[in-house]
Image (cartoon, rainbow, N blue to C red; front, side, top):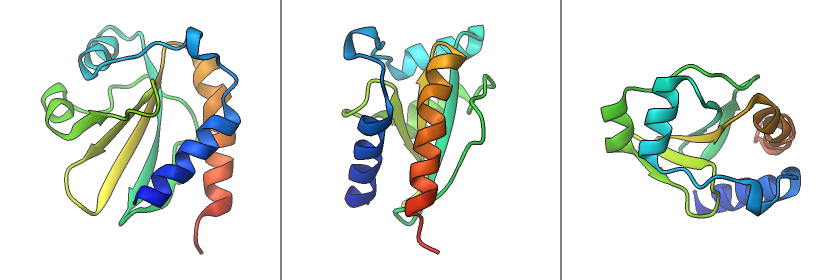
Length: 122
């Protein structure tokens, strides 16, 4: 699992061109509020048993989960200002990358998904 998160970290670092100063450091409460007001978009990477299994084909503005579920199961990824790790059990982890606009989201999503798909085990 740590190796996969390291891989995601490296991929994210390679694909993002948004400077650290331009990024917002969201809390889980910011994310909950942002989705309730329709101000945020996200894409998801899904990990099963520590291995990348799938990712979103587009950035979406729908609420990813109920607020209480997010409070219970999601934690801020300390390496990325935009990432949250959500796990209900030890087998499936969802990593959400949350953005304030579609351009930022797509700028990261496309290359991230391409890179993760290329490294996925058959």
